[in-house]
Length: 422
Image (tube, rainbow, N blue to C red):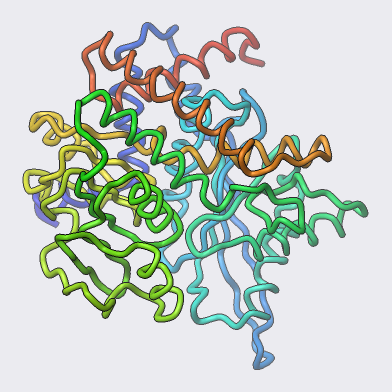
């Protein structure tokens, strides 16, 4: 591989990117000697082989991962993704981001993440259930309300969380809802959880628009990834008067300069499993992240904005609905071009915040109505945005560096108070 190819490969490395983001922020803090290494590395990484009997009677062995990055501020918290490209490095990066995400919104969790290498679209419901239960059983010694609390992520959902609850509860010989979050309401889920990540993004975009003096009403929004986060964000922003002018998913991209009918598009996607072909919109050929808009919401997978395309980003605000959609190299280019990036560890933390609410409700056996959940979420997200913006202005750094600084300071404070056991 030539130097150019090696450079591109490095930029696409999520674990390397997470480390670079951490190092840039940590270097601006007066950390005690050696403490940077203590908090940078994950505390535990587990790899499991998962034999599953398929519908035809044959056996397949899947590989599963669970990484706990930190538990100093509370139980490890983070989703489980099912995807053919899951790697230990990706899961480790996501676990680290979860540590900083929980710290930035100041909820009492550490960071964790899980994944299984599989293509769920090629598994029957029965195969998916058996795979999920085997994964939960093999990791039941890690999982628990006070140790490690998973949640849905890419290609996992409330039903999969319900299977984990049942598997864990059978092993423990008692019903334990607080072992995972993102569950169905009937199995201890929280009102407002499904919309929480998109709603948290809305609160951050409102804060950014107020800071920059950009009216949200009439602002043109492009959404990359019209799944749960992207569609909810689009719907809520449209209700605030924004125009959703472009949307994309795995089927393709569409645009409508006058604005998409978001509720109709959501129904179309439910019926047709993709945005392509939506009546009244035309196919979009250039990459959607380069679309002419005021607000860009990358809500797909990691490393979508790189040094290769950052110069072509035309949005004034990039609101990161996905984890790690912007590489460190791209960050520097966007900062130079005065693009205001709301970093993932702040912008998409509404999901984990309401997961925290769900965990609290499970543990006390009392459940809040949706308006109370949303009100509590708005308070936390608004305060978190204000904390990060203040740090950004004080130190004259971009919002990502500021968010990491806020998060690292909070984690370090707890470590210093607890001490390092040796």
